[in-house]
Length: 199
Image 1 (cartoon, helix red, strand yellow):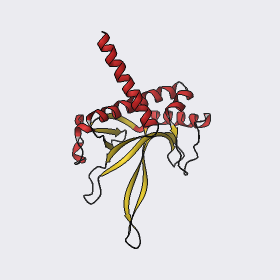
Image 2: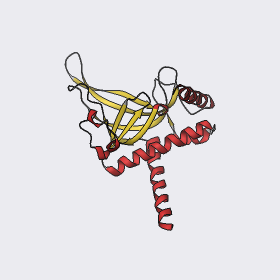
Image 3: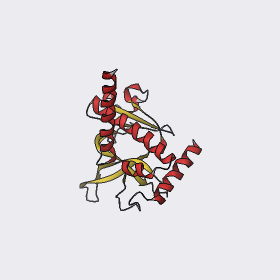
Image 4: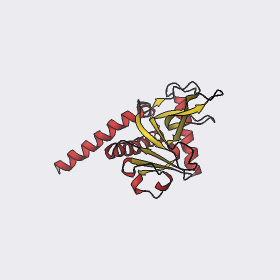
């Protein structure tokens, strides 16, 4: 019994440690875009974290956020890198699974399945993130599942203090979000209820 308990405790500490990375400074992964146009670049190095973010249409919700650096051509045909922000609302996630368990891998030809995590949204769209190795892929998957479950529970019971500890707020100049205030917490709660009612 003691070895099982010790192993369970080690796994819990591992998940908590990883969750602090993803809710704080972020973790480095590769984001794979689905293959739709062979001319487009399909794999990007990104730093990903969870933030309370304004989606731009008046909705404030916890999101998995990352920035993509893409090469663009200016008027004089010189190349420059422009950041583009991508995000997934945690409230839209239907499943988080190892990519090896998925049938959708044909859309991601450059992914290493054992190192990858597939996130499927409620609208059936998929996002694939690849970690440097199997262990980091497991940490990302377990940490993200744990954060989503814990945060959703604490939003439902109205525990703003725990949600504040778990999340950083969006520092982008396009957002009006500063600290997790009661007003923002209420908007996040309303967004969760609205999305739950629509699914």
